[in-house]
Length: 217
Image 1: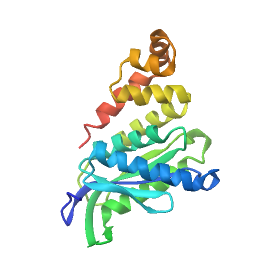
Image 2 (image 1 turned 90 degrees about the horizontal axis):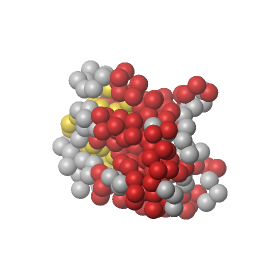
Image 3 (image 1 turned 180 degrees about the vertical axis):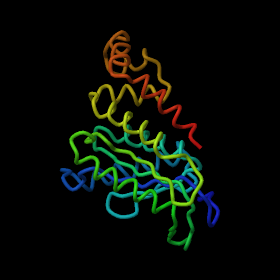
Image 4 (image 1 turned 90 degrees about the vertical axis):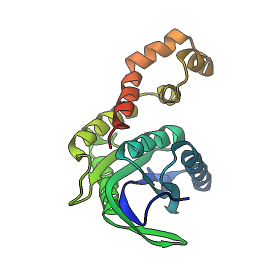
């Protein structure tokens, strides 16, 4: 159930699946995404639950920009390697126009839409092809400034997009609080090999970046 007032400033999230039309099993991918969003709603506690709106696009709202940025990372890591997700995060007021079915509008959503559209444009350029996340602040709204947030997101996305599937799994486990010994057992490799990957691929840096971004209010 939504915890958002009829009109308030929140962190809006719009996400979709990259190149979903090329998926070999699109119905299966859609089902996987629906299950993932259900798990995310239980784990991340958005103020408006994440839900699929049309096709492979989904939306939801969080109390803070930091919570939304963490959700974008959590979702991306938990769908990988099945598919890639991209996200636009906005901050601004959102008006609830109707409850059943839920219909929302307002500057917060316009900002999130602008953000995800910018991700799509940037990802076709070779220099920024790893970009999967962007943030925008609604016009005439007080909130976290986009420049520093987007600088961190660009670096985070570049690092994640440059590592192997195994390192993505190790990052997912690291963020979940699993020990390197536990991750080594899961991967059937030595704890030393896990430690080397964590250092070499900057997984600890990504985890630290996530922790700092979660503090963005």
